[in-house]
Image (cartoon, rainbow, N blue to C red; front, side, top):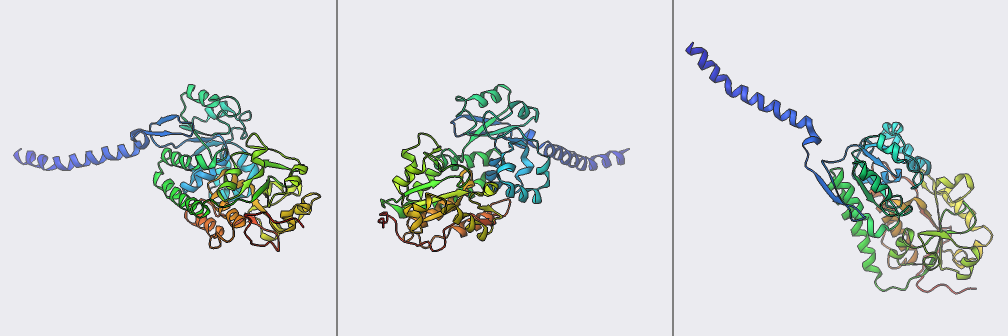
Length: 393
């Protein structure tokens, strides 16, 4: 009997350790249930608290995958639904994601990327633990707080981010918010550091430089000339690169239409056409992922030969350029700003290599490779300082 008691006592420590290990395994399996709460402040200044990092996300705009894919190695694994704009507008990017993450094909959609096209009901049915809305559909088109209030009333956490309307104000805070809600703060901060260093380098060199006049022809070739950014959006990039967007004084909002006659009368020193693969069917400017330099160059030459545009001083003097339009909703726009800075002030930025910047983003951060043609200048374009517009012949 005594031997049995001693044997039992000797077994107690083992049993206790085994029980502890089983308990710890159960806690680990519980995962998010025991995670610490996550509190963030979004771009609308709203404080939002989640019980733990989000794992079932609905993206109101599919284009927000551009940002998620810079701070998470498998952003598709976080999604239970998204807007259908990504596949429609970024077919090449969708194909690259599909090749690497086949689950993307099974993601339910929640409507298009406008406030009126977004389906609140479909989003709720997907039982998300977080909804991510862009500023452009979170109330700016239907009255403050419209969709946000609906999700709050349904008990579903919602954050608002922005890489489009006010990119210079909102890109960094939006990245940090996204990083925190998915438990990838360090990855988000690494990209933020990369991004801010390049922004600051451009700003410090520019100083009080004289700014050349710039006209940006958005979606060149898609419709009657000329759709253009007003305040915010691409205007932020032009300003950061040391240019002066002539449309900002003419358009009351973020985008709008300017007549060809107005453009010819203002005769900007620099002309920039934007485009993408979504314009291929309309014979517009084709740039972006998977596009060869030859295809892009031919499409830009066709745009510059259109009646009216060829009369611009910028076109005649070789200061007409092409730029991927979909830089307008992704933090990779820092490479586009570097490209424009070289066009506007080639002497100041002779050592800046925007392609190297984009290649580094592709290598260090992006969930998909960023290969293609994203900007170009016409054959024979001349590098000269444009602080003072060239004289008309």
